[in-house]
Image (cartoon, rainbow, N blue to C red; front, side, top):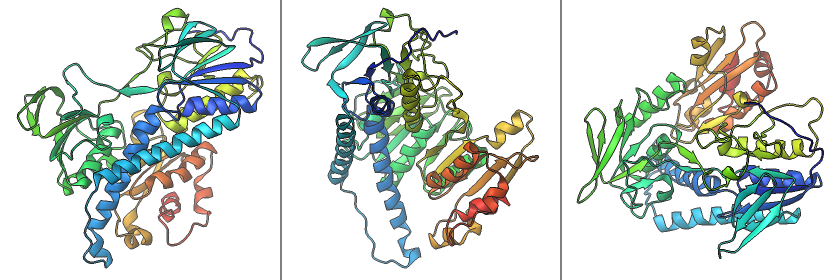
Length: 462
């Protein structure tokens, strides 16, 4: 695919469809650079995927992790600790967090002079957007720059008649109307293992259908092994090589049927099999934009095949992470306002850190060990278990390890994986090392706090 930059120099009128992390970041950056900005959002400012998926799931996971910690309280010298979930309070807490964050986004945008329009936008040409309000009224906005950032929604296969009661998508589970007595989770990627941990912590019996031979396909095999051992220890039923193909409703539950004939019974089924882009109602047919499988291909400046239409967030087909979307939004505003005429740094998606909020947590960044060896690349791999770190024993949780991948010739840190408590926080150190081309020596000579889990980072670097 070829791209044309056209003749735009310093466009001043932005119209952004989608108020998630990418849209908000683009809007605030463009305003600071002097642009006139209109942001169109039909649901919730802050983003549906962010505030209606990520935030509530992590809030529930946090509650589940607190329950898990309390289950081992006696080992830390606490007695008579009883925990009971109040789902109504949990639901209220999630709603309060969502509203607080959304209100914060709105106040930020309004304080910078962004025009927020409630409604659903679609393209009517390469330079105009039509907005339909919740009341059905329409209005049209002309633009020098159009930014599409409408995100994704849970994928539902044809064989799954989702009803929001027994057959659920993730958006039906924050929390569900009733706690499943036996939840069958279909999909063992990031979302699947997070929900498995969450509902297992809440007390549900959980069966996890793993279509391949390890959870988290594509992740470090050693990381997956630690997680599988944790699930087995907690009583999760792992069905390896089980690819679901249909679901049958019964009087008191569901039966999920797999391609190999296995039948897994439960009270509820939860789909965690990816997402699909929200691009079908954007009016793309009214423009010259190229589309590939519902996603919109972009170049390194996030430009589509139309010179003034940019794309950010999940629908760009890049890494579906809020952190990535935020960076894309900022880069779009800078490029469209002419800041990238000279040498500048493009987004390096290979250096984006990611985390999985299960128990134990999983996080990684950069080059993975298996990937390097598969490519025949020479790397140095060092690993330190948390069982050798004092703080892990103080926390009564010594599961997992820190693994660092580096260049044997230069010592430059290329990547790393962490599995264990607070992995999502600890990976930031390795991410900084990767993005800044720091060396193993830089880590070993850093004086970390003692006792702290971060000591595993410097020990793994030695």
